[in-house]
Amino acid sequence: MFVILVYDVNVKRVSKVLKTCRKYLHWVQNSVFEGKTTEARLARLMSELKKIINREEDSIIIYCFETTRYSNREIIGLKKGGEDYFI
Image (tube, rainbow, N blue to C red; front, side, top):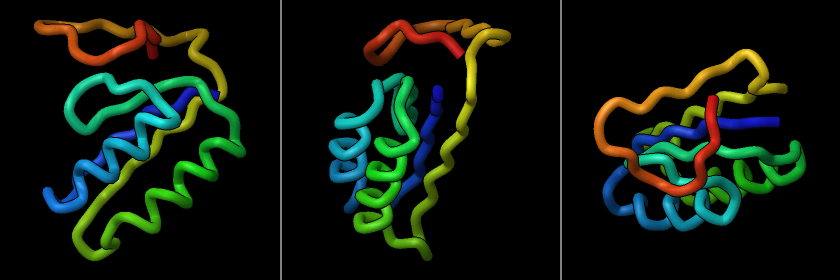
């Protein structure tokens, strides 16, 4: 599956969330990650993130796609991040 993860967390927890997400996905730009993963790896990522965040202050949204076959990714402006995946 292909996932896009976006987060908005308190500055005290940003570095821990960033480091955790980088273990599983590719950094795209500030607070945005994407990449191919398995359900098991996604479950581990979510478990780790739940231990880090404060659910009353922080927000993480994960979009899951079974395929990227009918998708297109366009970048306007400065390209940031790592891998050249498309969505």
